[in-house]
Structure formats: structure tokens, C-alpha cells
Length: 366
Ligand SMILES: C[S@@+](CC[C@H](N)C(=O)[O-])C[C@H]1O[C@@H](n2cnc3c(N)ncnc32)[C@H](O)[C@@H]1O
Image 1 (spheres, rainbow, N blue to C red):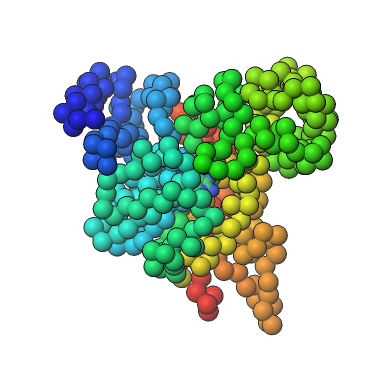
Image 2: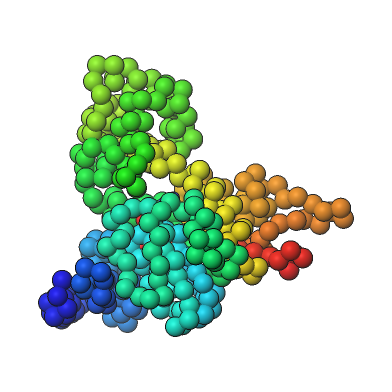
């Protein structure tokens, strides 16, 4: 878009006063200019104008993604102005812009995302490098950029963005009747329809049990296997119709969300990618470098918690000859950090978020 037009657009939105307390920054991109929502400045403005919860909520509905625990996670990175940082889940770029705001001219930020849609949020900032890839290849890319072992901080804000849930075509939400796709990277891999129609009964039951924590996993899998004999299940509506009888009236939404979450985690191999990325972090961070992770469900939080505590996914720290614990990280927060009540009110999608921060120790354990 042309810069002049964008300026008018931003002025109209700001000029309407209390209703639209939203700070945009106009950024040059490869395709021209774009107006980007600046979460940090908007939040400050909301606080200054003492905006009501409903007003902020309405604002958030228009966003690609509202960054969760922004200040807490940026503080956790302890950003050095000339440091090298990696945001492995770039998404709407809210956290990345926060990092860039705190970096000096000699600093550098790499942003990973496997979803092509995230590319529209790339800031035209010479200190920023976008990597369109799965973060499971973190070490390979950092080696390519000659930064392996030289990174001051890694931020991971796991899962999918609001944009994924709000895009009817992508199939992430049971609110719409899209095709059962759910791939973050639409260039490759199996879709949710492939999982639902192609997995054996045992494998399907494991997906629902492990990733959706559904008690009725076996019954659900058996039902789907029977149903697909007559017709392939292709859309969200077809799936919903079949699983509806399992959901009690009161907890219907929760049940649907668990089924969709389970399929999404399987389709994107979220647990496998997370494990690889955490292991790569050991090779990518420099001693003293920070690892900051935001999780959204208990399975990934347990994995992260164990890894930061012990350096492995079982959470059992090795001991040296003298019985001293040998762990690669020093925990910065022993008690998990969760969003404030106000944040959950204005951004309900943040309600299940958990933040953990740790620092890589050097070879002598310091
Ligand atoms: C919760 S959103 C991050 C939002 C971001 N912090 C912001 O402020 O806008 C997660 C993002 O990470 C991406 N993502 C999730 N898993 C990934 C993976 N294994 N590799 C690369 N990107 C991934 C998703 O496509 C999504 O855009």
C-alpha cells in the first residue's frame, strides 16, 4: 500500500478516540508499506486511557495475533542491545517487534516461522532475518548463519496464532466448516483429514488420548473408523456431526476443542519439533544465554519444565561423582509465570499460557 494512504488510515483509526486505542507503526516491506499493530505502545496507551476490558477485547479481535505475556517474556530474555536473539515462533511478529525495540543498532534478531502467512508481518529492519522453516532445524540454520553457540537468547511462544483459528480456510477451528487441513506449513505433510481417514483405530485412539487428554479416546476412534467406511470425513462439520454424541451438552465446546487440539498437534508433529528445538538450543545458545518458553497445554509444559530442570525430557538430573546435580540450565523462575487477570480478561486466548525462563550454564556449571 502507498505510505500516504496508510497514514490516513492510521489517523482515522486513532482519531475516533477511546473506541480505537490502537497504535500502528508504518513499516516499509518488500511489497510497499504496511501498517503494523504495535502491541507494546497500544498496551501503554490503553493503560493511560484506562480503557475498559470490553473495549480492549474488541480491539484485539482485529489482530493477526496479540502477543502473550509480552513484557514478562522480553524481561526474561534480558536483552543486551548488541546481542543476537532468535524468535522461533515469529507469527504476527509482536514479540519480535518488542525485541527489536530493545535492541541497539548492532543487535540482530532471527525470526522463524513455518507458515507462509507470517511473512506478511516481516518488518523491513536491517537487524531482522526471517527464516521460513520449522524451528526443529534451529541449529542447522544458526550454523549456516555462523551464529551457533553465539546466541544470547531464544524465545518460543508455542502453538498456533489467533490468525490460524480465525482463518476459515485453514481448518484449525470448529467454529467454521473448513476442510480438515490444520497444517501450519501448507507446503508439505499430511492434513487432519489424512489422519482421521488414514490412521488405524489404535493410532487414532493414542492421538486423542495423548494430545487431547480425552477419556473417551478409544470409543471416539472406533466410531470414526466405522463412520469412514461409508464416507471419507473431509470437513470440520462432518467431523463435528459424528463426534457430537460424545460431548455432554455442558462441556461440548471443551470437548470439541480437545479433539481439534489433538489432531492439530499430530498433524504438525508439535511434540517432536519441540523436543528437537529444545535440544538444539543447547548448541545454539552461548553460556549465559536465555531460553524463554511460553506453553499452552500441560503436555508441552511438562516437557519444557523437565528439560529446563534436568536437561532431558524425563526430568531426572544426572549427578557427578560427588553427587552434585549436572544440569545444563539455571532456572530463572522456579515458580511458573502466568498471565495477569487483566491480560486474561482482555485476551482470553492467553488463559492457559505458562512462561518458563532458564539460562545456559557454562561447562564449569556457572
Ligand atoms: C503463538 S504463535 C506466535 C505469536 C508471536 N509470538 C506473536 O507475537 O505474534 C506461534 C507461531 O509459531 C509458528 N510455529 C509453530 N510451530 C512451529 C514450528 N515447529 N516451526 C516454525 N514455526 C512454528 C506458527 O505458525 C505461529 O505463527
